[in-house]
Length: 368
Image (tube, rainbow, N blue to C red; front, side, top):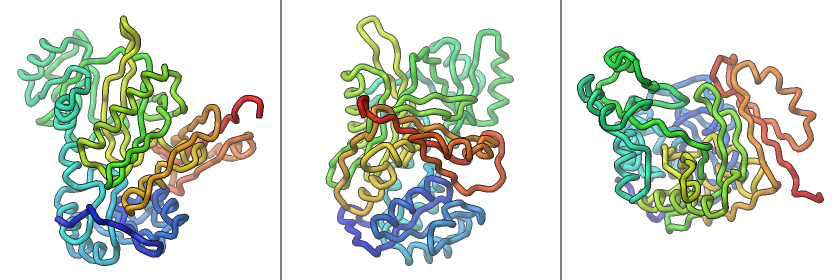
């Protein structure tokens, strides 16, 4: 494993990015503004991140020779998605610093390991249980109750790899439909709202959090984010503290997102941690136009060994709206909306559920 403690890039150095989607694209654009070069590694020849970098590697993650050549061309390596194959991460880590540390992926790629990790920190989550068969699913339901959410332990996002179980459902049929041998059952949470905290942590342990963001999902896909979330200041401070505690316990370097539920409580609202995303996150896209430093720049600063910025929100409220599927065809309408900034990812043909771009709207402070 390479030494990641003393990474200190200078303008002109090169960052390697695993993954060529819109997150990789925006990371590369943030790096370019700071005078840093990026090289993207992705198996998809149509990767939108390829459009904004001079050098790219189009190869499979199992191609060891391609990985080695890629590593030789860069000074530090990061990733835009959490399901980086373990073997690829090991090959790269033997040659160049990988940030965030690849060991973190062992926790965040597995929903059960992640929940166990958060629980050991004394942070609350929904009740959960390991499920490996129909009998163990029945036992978990008896303990947790219904409704509940059954999820695959790995490779789930945007609502994929999960199903809600309700009274009267055929348990055996539900288990078969998930097509997995390892799952986790989580109690269904009657939340007031969903929120997230985008936190950046440097190798020196410095932590900076953006404003807590409220998230609205449609068909299990994030549609709208609003910052700041309309929650009490004390609860927002608790949410930021939780994100900082998780980042510290992981010895994290870079940007991560912690998704949480806000629940009504007899003594006031409280938060439960839902998931950790060890990367820049869709709910942080508002920071591109709505804050003094974006989540993408913070991530680049952290992995480059540079000081983090102090995030200051530009407007009273900042809203981010995802353009999903055919909604991208209506982009011109947004171009004339005051205070709106349009981001188009340069992907191919729109498909249902595919994030094609987003719009950020900044509402100025009152009186301005």
